[in-house]
Amino acid sequence: MSISVITISQNTPRRAALVSLCLCPFLLFAGVTNRAPDRVVSRFRIGPVFEYRATRDGGTFWALRPLYSQLSDPSSDTRVDDVAWPLGTFHRTHEQLWWRMLLAYGTDLDVNRDDAAWSAALFPVYYQGRTRQSEDYWALFPLYGHLPHVLLMDDIDFALFPAYLDYKVNGVEREYYLWPVFSRMGEVAGVKRIGVFPLCGRTERPDERHTYCFWPFWTSAVYSGDHNPGDSWMLFPLCGQVSREKEHQWLFLPPFFSHATTDSAERWRMPWPFIEKETTKTSRKVSVWPLYGDVGSEDEKRWYAAWPLIESFELTSAGRRTERSRFFPFYVGETVYERDAAGSEREKESYTRLWPFFSRESDQSGSHVRSLELSLIRFSGGIERNWAPFWTFYERIESEDEVKHDAFWGLLQYRAAKPSAVAKEAAP
Image (cartoon, rainbow, N blue to C red):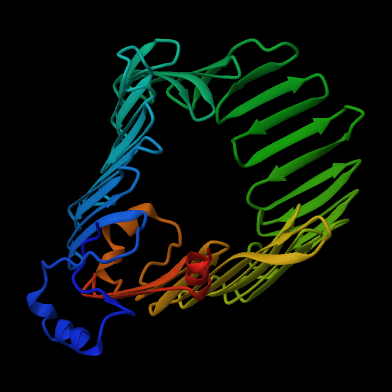
């Protein structure tokens, strides 16, 4: 069963179609069900504000836009609830759950187990959870807390931050008092450290030595290993120099002016980030930002003009080539080509957006045209569920068997079977 307001098919007489069109304001809640079987077996809409639909496999979606929407798909065991998106969203896939509401967010690795790992936070003040190793933790910043596995750090402990901070990276402990002034680092084989930050300090390893005074104004290093011996120094923000066997570089007002050469590349910045030129054995880069830039390598070609307005690139990988061009925000075009075993290319998918008028995407299974198109993001489930219907006045959906037209949230509909599908149906 399919619920709609007006369905105009090829078998509808002209007079009946005209009467239906004239009566459309009075048929808002009417349903016409003479449709061919479809994945969506039931659908009802009241403008862009309310929508309900059901699919053959038991999936449902309903929305009271823009306040709330709910998507349930039993085939993939997925449920998504949006509350005034993007303010709040709740996602469950199989037994895993993650959610976000304003600055609060959380995860649960198994909603069916009371002892599963979970986490919740009100950024940046409060954190609580349980690790996979069943360790409970909590933190109330900046008063006191313990946080395991945050960013690249193994564990973080703090009390009255910045009075005390302790964390580990790759098993090496770093302890700070009045962070970052006084510090102590755990013992690492072959590494010696001494210093009072930021006044002076030194770090020694078997093949190199780093020192600083009144960091970051003076830093230096000596490299004594066989791999790339030499030295470097910097008097920030005035000048610096690197003199090593495989690298030579001078810097003036770093990082704005510099010239670097290695055994495989050369780079100029005059000044960064506005003028930059870099060449390697396999790539090149010329940039006069934001006016023009050109980057090229064996598998990537890219150029831009009046960044970020105009951009074009071609990316090649094994059996695949992607071409994309952009004139922000008005035009985006992207085509993906697939290469077969014989080396011949064929179009796999394409996408075109002429903002704010329409967008079109197609692949081997069909195409989808929408007008208007106000979104500047191609893939966003939250926008599609909660906001896109407000500006979607017309849609054309082409599949292997038929072409469907939908205007004004179902008030006008037309569908026609493709000749190939009709011939296939009529075949004995």
